[in-house]
Image 1 (cartoon, rainbow, N blue to C red):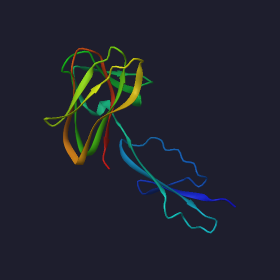
Image 2: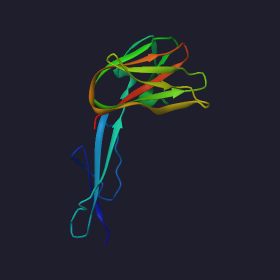
Image 3: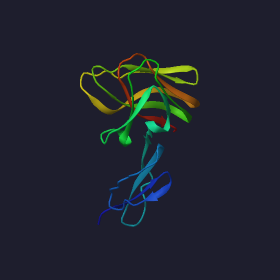
Length: 171
């Protein structure tokens, strides 16, 4: 006899009886997955594994100034915003953020961005890297309590900046 499993995503049961689960087409935002073994007499483990994760928002959720919107099958969710101008802006409202990260691509010629929440500078991200990258999650800031406001990502130079998404962790 072997154990089976019970699982849930955000409190809703998901099929994982054989111990495997594949989650697809999840909406952007923070999610909680729980999984527990069930013994041969039907008792679930009282200490389930719990994993919290965040699906980033696609870059198109945010307004842009001096960014070009492009598509690529290799980009996160198929799109990215590209800037080659100083003070280009990607901007949008966020709510309940405990931390913020950018999904970015970079290479040796990439620039950096400064990130603001309302008028407060919350971080800087340097996208320059020795080898070309895509879909790197670059942490920006974490907060002691949930924060809401207008998030602005502003380029610091005329160097190339590629933004593929924004992750807003809410738990």
